[in-house]
Length: 497
Image 1: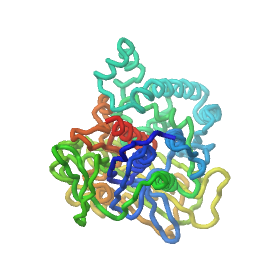
Image 2 (image 1 turned 90 degrees about the vertical axis):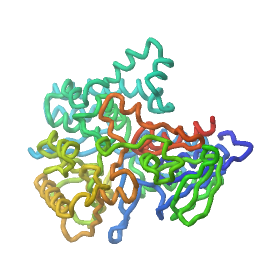
Image 3 (image 1 turned 30 degrees about the horizontal axis):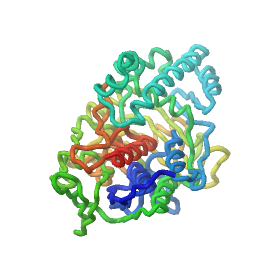
Image 4 (image 1 turned 180 degrees about the vertical axis):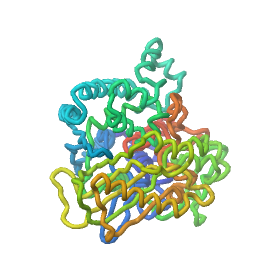
């Protein structure tokens, strides 16, 4: 059980995404009086659920890795995560398909993955996979402590903390090459470079622009992927419950108009209805650009630097479906690749267009280990899109419809038929901008398209004393466990301050 703060100081957490929920739970466990304010009707942020006909469908993150981030938080509170949410480890990490008719399953067991790769592309490529996994593990082991789980590092802090070891350490993380360049050293088969290059999109990046350091994602996923029983939003519910058991209060359906300051220090918030909530500190869990653009008031606009439109990460075009499928043996996670991977990212990042033949991710939420649905099933279908949700007109409706038609044809060409009689809800960059203001629809903050980009991402502490930042736009980055780590780092920084 964590120690408590004797004077029971008050903190307001703005935004109940995973970063905000984790910070709120952590601070409540530490003894702070926590008020969590969320403008939407449900908690979870991007980890949201949508009603589609009679079904509730996960409409955001679907991949859960690094469960120890959550295990550690509950253990700190003297509890077990398993008491509040059921996590099922997946044997098949993902099923992949290509236009040439080939398919490949990646497994939690690396030996089975190597065998599958050998059957797909030959023994040399299987050996390349084994070497690649060792390389990715080395990157992760190098960055996990000082970068990922530590307060925002800087080149100077790295030199101070690692001294003469800093130079070889920076060399090991392979930050000067692109992911795609590095993958070419392990795989001659373009399908495999495409498969492992796709991990760049987990952080909203292009594999042709992102530093090879992000190849660590392959090791993180190979270390374990979990399916949350009943829906991934139950993880958000577990965090909320932990906060409430330690006295935290949720104010749902209430937006924040501005963050208040007193003597240059954050001192509370004003709700949209005019109510004032005073606090000793404020934790902000929205897009960092919302602060920079003054959406929370001019007094905190200097807190962090915003992200210029050209520096944004990927957005997405998604469809939540409750429908019959046929023709392709779906697993829980499925990826249908397009024929021209470089062109897909040229369209998105260079021309701000929807790709002609996109890579399609399909999460079949009623499938997993031993699960085979009877009748209509819940699907999240996702393609990458440019973050232009705040541009005048956004993506024209005709282009959105045309992209859906191309996507459905592409899936059918690879064997999967989605029957038209099912209910569907579509979400695009403009809708994501509405949900997460100042993002332009970008789902991952700034794109890590340079070796130094991760060092430029804002940390928990901002330029306004008493104001802290959490979420996917803050250090250590996007993704469920990373956003949760940002919440823990903010709680740590706040308690230390």
